Amino acid sequence: MNKFATIFVVLIVLISQSVFAAEALKLTQVEFNEVDAGMPYNIEKVPVESPESMAGARIAIVAAHGFEEVEATYPIDYFLARGAEVEVISPDWIKGRVMAVKFLRPSVWVPVTKNISDAKVTDYCAVVIPGGAWYPIIMRTDSQIIEFIKGAHKANKLIASICHGPQVLISAGLVKGRMITGVGDIRQDLTNAGGEVIHDQPVVVDGNILTSRDPNDLAEFSKGIETYLKKNLAFCKSQEKDTVTGLSVSESMKQSGSWSAICDHCKGTGRLFGGPGMYPYSCPGCNGTGHVQSSQPPVNTDH
Image (cartoon, rainbow, N blue to C red; front, side, top):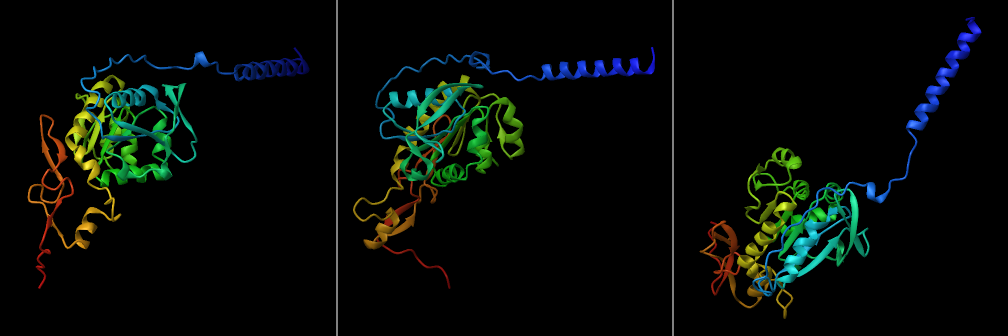
């Protein structure tokens, strides 16, 4: 074979390889039924013993596109069936509805009750953070969502999260020093954030942080939230403004000639602990405020 013939053969081979590679990288449209919907979850519903057992509790579900459907819809149904009020709160850029998924497959639209700019921490007893493989990416990078969760924690509201949701707690700085759990693939992240990860319990409660592992724990997760709120429901109203003066409880006391003294029962924390799970509950001595009314001003010990 002469030199020109050899060059011609090499060119044919190179062109064939290029065509084959281009064909191998050809893009095709994704069909809906080809998208992985993950495992089917058939969590049994917990029988409703009392349709008013959670009456008076107002719960915020924070949600952005990509949350795992059942991790929001199951608790929502549970709470509503027991008389609680539920609001779905989303980032400001999400309007009207938020998209749930089943693993990677879009599933249903859930109506948004309120955007985060219009939500007030003091309006709620609890904030629930569902999971989802890519939902936390949105939530933990939204500064308003993170500040809302931080504010709820500071106000001693219950913060409940399941599956991948505790990743949002990492960004809110609420994991360090806490007993906590989550789905298996984020447990190393929780450990790296300073949490004490519990592997073998469906519900882990540490102070006002309640977490669960995955959708299989949803019944226990929902029951845990109910149990906590039934013991702490008085605290939901302890931070409200006086309906007449518009002042906080402590401000109103000062203007009426009363003074605030530290509660002897809870030593100013507003919380006591008890029950089989040692759940924190609102101190009955001060209605969860940490202070009690006194006719005498506090003694000044500065000299």
